[in-house]
Length: 214
Ligand code: SAH
Image 1: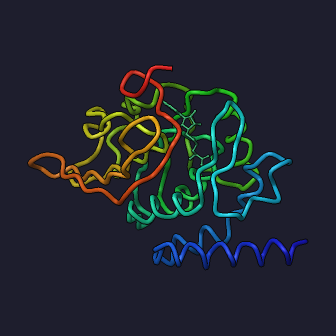
Image 2: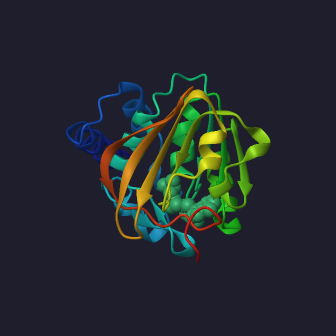
Image 3: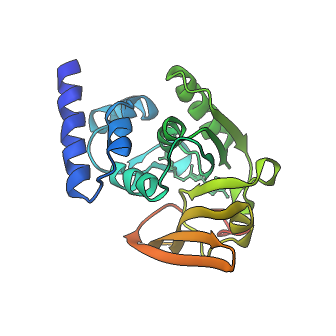
């Protein structure tokens, strides 16, 4: 079984490379972070398939390729203070925590935040602060951040999130309709936000004051 999991992980890494992920630090952290512990028992055989999977509260653990592309876009060196909106299973949080100095992560469902905390502890990850609340407004208490990652789809870029970045900080966020979005990279330049798209994506909705209503 252990051999089987190792083979599946290596196959996943190959498919991430084919999908355009070339940051070796990101690939190495994905290769050594057990995704199966963030997934319900019934879904575990699918842990290394490159697809999103259902978690509690009608939410999903993001597709590994999306996790890898978003993390790669953040260009983490290990020194950064990161804000993540949408903790979900905590898998993306674990990847960020292993590539940065500290992660503040906000989830609107208490039950998911509780489970994510348990799984992060299981992996011995301690550089994460988890909060329950509406992350569409960011998390001003710990601002400014070097990077912000939103893992749920917003109707537009929330100004509050850009305001909580340092100058030259970077926000990665899916923006679009309920059913289809563009993955945007927003740089907070001194003269204002600069935005580019990494392409199409599909995320569950960001629900909150600067997101969608329930
Ligand atoms: N990165 C997570 C993705 C989970 S799906 C993973 O791979 O497991 C997106 C998550 O965003 C869901 O758990 C959802 O409950 C959460 N979410 C949606 N709107 C939110 C908001 N306004 N504030 C905080 N979390 C939110």
